[in-house]
Image (cartoon, rainbow, N blue to C red; front, side):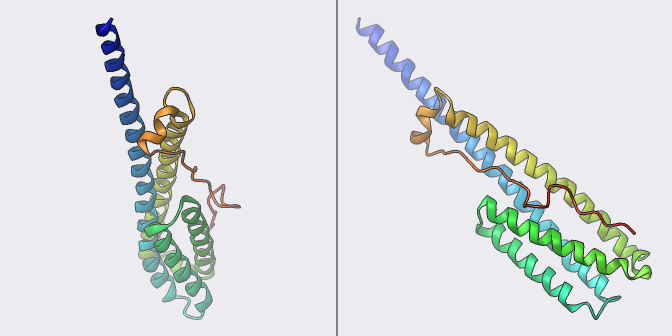
Length: 184
């Protein structure tokens, strides 16, 4: 009888360790995925000054647009450093709008659209947008896996012990469901 009780206790401890480790692993994956979004947002924000400086040479009188870009870039940096998922999403939306405004200014200058620097920056931004989209999807997948575990039996019993809770999904800011289109 003692061996049966001991075997049940050992099995429960093993099951507890497996549950704890599973939840902690999924939480780490979600953190890693959120870090991937931060990396892409930072890369994108770092490309913006180059784009702005290229456009500035052609459109020196568009000061308000460049100030808005600088402010949006600062919001992204702050949100990336210590913001919630919602703050990161809102900062991304502001930067998206600022980029649309810069591209609108660029449309007014035909010589700029033919500039090799401008074309290269556009390509880098497009690549970054694709990587950012992938990073958001990767995070949402990791959050969904974690949220499913935290909310279903038997793993939900270990979530408090593991210090893991459900995560918010990374939603596109209102009006940003599709990428901005800029035609030249």
